[in-house]
Image 1 (tube, one colour):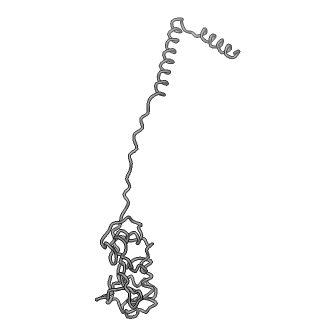
Image 2 (cartoon, rainbow, N blue to C red):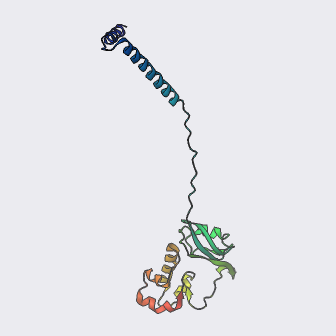
Image 3 (cartoon, rainbow, N blue to C red):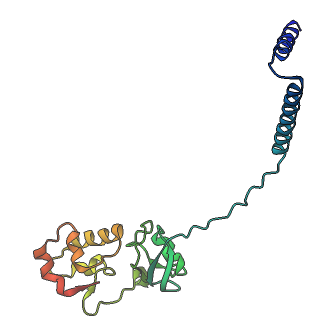
Amino acid sequence: MDKLKELWEKITYWWHNLSYSHNQKKALLILAGALLLISSVVVFKGSSKEIIVAPAIPVEIAIPEVTIDVAGAVNNPGVYSIPSQSRVIDAIRAAGNEIKGSDLSDLNLARIVKDGEQIYVNPQSRTVNGKSAIRRVVPQGPLNINRATAQEFDSLVGIGPVIAKRIVEYRRVNGPFMAIEDLQKVSGIGSAKFAEFKAKVSV
């Protein structure tokens, strides 16, 4: 309370000692009051102004796709577009799933598919002398290296059962061969060995 009284006395003393006339002091008070009133209106009006937030616009992100050819023992063979990073099993499902009894053993179902590749499901099994066997098409002309079995690779000049199994395993892990020259990526097949049988294979 004493501080307020002391402050008021200082303000009064300052006011009386201003080197202004009575009219000038009166005008100064009116101007100060007007400024205070305008400032109050601006502050209160600004604080109550409604802020309109623009509605969020949803952004659609297109998922890239790959085109693959699913052939062989599936219910609906054909060309399909599926999301990239899809697996071989997803491609087979897109083609209506494999036919009952089909041989999927030489396919890596967890492998990510590549754009433009063909996935071939070996045909149905059949029963021979009470035992299950796989019905395979006898190759006519060059051997398709993306469909051939280990036994069929074994029939090629210079390819024994060990290398034949390596070819099938390489294809299962890495996907179909893009060119016959890719066979040289398989351990045990050099340029000399490849030259012996390259005329008898195709993709």
